[in-house]
Amino acid sequence: MKLANNHVLILLPVFNESKVIFSVIKSIKKEGWKNILVVDDGSTDNTYNEAKKSGVIILKHITNRGKGAAVKTGLEAAKKLGSEIVVTLDSDGQHNPKDIKKMVGQIKRGCDVVLGIRDFKKRHIPRYKVFVNYLGNILTWMFYGLWVKDSQSGFRAYNKKAVRLIQTNNDRYEFESEIVREIVRNNLKWTEKIIDVRYSDYDQNKKNKQSLSSAIKTIIKLALFG
Amino acid sequence: MNITVLSVLLLIFSLYSIGERVVRFIRKEQGQSVFKLIAIIFIWGGISYVALFKLGSENNLNIFIFIGFVVVFFILFRLINILEKNERLLTEIIRKQALKDLK
Image (cartoon, rainbow over all chains, first blue to last red):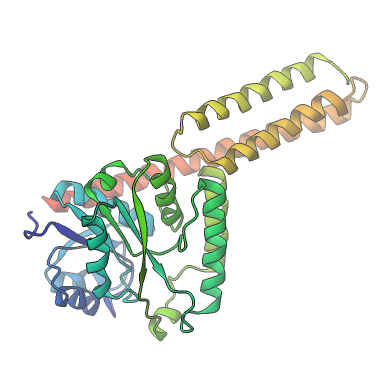
């Protein structure tokens, strides 16, 4: 399997998003990104077939292992495919594919990792998300000693060096904070870039979004296992 | 301070546990964090304090309860670690299986 010539791989970890995955892939392709890798994290609905219809590279976990596990599988695949830049996006359509260009631009200007940050001053972002994210930022800073403005954002870009050096253990949402630890541990050059987010009714009502209980589990896991 | 064989043994074990963590933290080993280091120092430091200053050789029931607490804590921590390890192993197997589709 070979990548198209620009060697930028768009990585979409996905779990039970059959209603939107096709349109999300289509909107990424519309922006001119041809190399798209979908990691289906054990979906029990029609996600796999919907993604396959759009002709992207697709890998499947036989059972659900969590977003962190799916992204890690994608990063391993990126190494095998020889991609120079990897951009990760959430697969529920909340991220705007138009922002991929500026994330890739920062990597080309010499950054190893670019963290997409939501503009929390915008009123359409639910207030509880702002609070949970702020809490996540404080804990990430406490555990790893690096202050980031959006520790839980799934919109990130990595260059080849970062993909090679980053080693994560956690399978679930702790993964996002673990990336911050790896930036510190490997002394990677990083920056943040404001991204656009769109919270739809679909996104707010879906069953597999991060709940308060999973957020508490995330905190305990980070504390015990780093 | 009540120095008994038991308190000395607990102190040695606590110092070993703290020392091992400090070395792992300095080496920046994977899975080590400031919070985890502080938690370990706090827990084993507390055990050392109780062993040295609060346990008397005459108070057998307290010693029994205290050792029970230490053993249960230790076993629980080990079990959580083993569970985590197995979870990671399972993910690794599933990942290898998924990556086969890449060829």
